[in-house]
Image 1 (cartoon, rainbow over the protein chains, first blue to last red):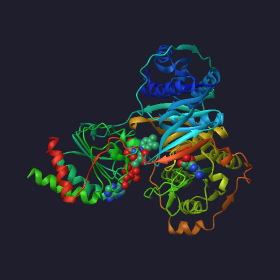
Image 2: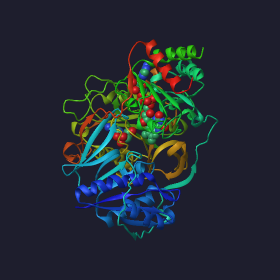
Image 3: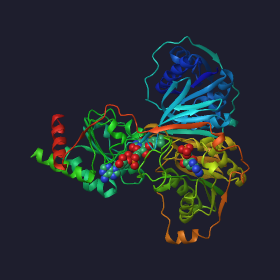
Image 4: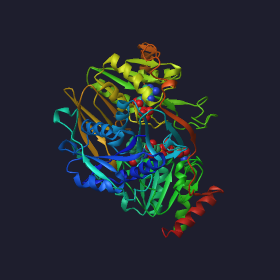
Length: 325
Length: 260
Ligand SMILES: Cc1cc2nc3c(=O)[nH]c(=O)nc-3n(C[C@H](O)[C@H](O)[C@H](O)COP(=O)(O)OP(=O)(O)OC[C@H]3O[C@@H](n4cnc5c(N)ncnc54)[C@H](O)[C@@H]3O)c2cc1C
Ligand SMILES: Nc1ncnc2c1ncn2[C@@H]1O[C@H](COP(=O)(O)O)[C@@H](O)[C@H]1O
């Protein structure tokens, strides 16, 4: 039996929470299949982090400490990952589905000629087989997958499970790598932080958010805006609305937009893909209006209306106005 | 300069998703298909490079007969040439199999740039672009939201979390997977659609690509065993009644929350 290798991620001088979540699945699968958990901690000046990860779920940690590992590059991290796979004899390699994980993991799989599964919300062992669970059709359906190749590579959805809480008898060994700046074919230049342009949705008490189901840009003004005004709230949007240029980027709620937590979030014509949900699911109260009774937004909503938003929203606006007198 | 754009045709975003009798995928008969959203942005990005410089844009798609329509649309938008890999074995491939097919085409065409979507709207694998890059030993990047070119170097803004961006530089030839919203996608003009009819359109099989036995059903490593509606957790209370009754109940709740 091989082992499970976790490729941990270092961000702002700490191991990311998402890596401890990967450890939760790794430990569970290892326990059920008789594998060991091993990990790679790569970065610059990561000695103490490698020690910490070894004790908190990472098990036998390979530490790759190098100046060229300070910023993510598929080239340098790739060298470290290949060395760690070799040193660990791993047959299951797990990353988190973060901007570096989703960038490198499929490439590693192709190089190993291994089966690859992305963005798993659960990894379980059933009758001795590892089963990967993930969403398809942008969150509308669940899929259960198995991998039959000798090696398997997967990424885990951040936030899908709790961080590993137990203690492990870990150890740390150094992974010696010869990296040179000349090997960098993808070169990190800089990070640009999100510029805020005045619309701060995080301060709003009420957000009325529209998705692709609103249907047209003018409907945001004609149908959603009166409700926003009646409730004294702010307007929000899903990504396709912003991509289409219907509203500027600062209105976007989700993993690549703003993370909001208002007292009331009204989602209109939004299906509820995970990237949207992570931006609003901790709102105090959620109302969802969607004509599809199976839309995943209803999984996080407190109250749901299965109907055409173009009928419900104007009626709700009038009722709010009437209630205010 | 030669640019390859890989396009997938996927069920229309508003298509009904009924599960097939074997439970392993959706029922594809009788529903509408369209070009994967991410790939429309990939094609537009290639066409913009062509608008600004001398470039040939080649669109490639693996899939059944219906894919002809997607490729014709791409030619109508301004692509110069299409390659359709049409073979039941190709369709039975998993992501790594599809990546191997695309790699065979890329090796034969030796483009300066391959532009793809970051993810397919149906399978959501987000796998093929980095896989293709690995198989062809080209540098790659994903989640591109801005592409700038100067002398064979590409400067890419890639989207990371919370609206932040990471700027990277890579040299051509390379593979770029684009995120939605990177540009505003054009429509095929009537003139473009007419012109498309005369553009080269190649159809290839797995055997033509020299990949017999290496891809397809027998080589599948990842198997979708079952798809199902998401497990219902603590589901929302669904309000029933007339529009007026529903509006009144919602107002009642909003009052209860102290927001009115
Ligand atoms: C890396 C990455 C980052 C992403 N970041 C974000 C992000 O920050 N924010 C985000 O939102 N998405 C993000 N996405 C995109 C996400 O995966 C989904 O594609 C997106 O959230 C879908 O938006 P939507 O719900 O508006 O559209 P759809 O999924 O198309 O849903 C439209 C909904 O409207 C309903 N509808 C249609 N007409 C009506 C009507 N008349 N009345 C009522 N209901 C109607 C339909 O039933 C459907 O459920 C990201 C994706 C990736 C890969
Ligand atoms: N059947 C296909 N034919 C051509 N290109 C494809 C095909 N499937 C996926 N792609 C490309 O690979 C990208 C990522 O898809 P995926 O890895 O399946 O999520 C898509 O956006 C397309 O650019």
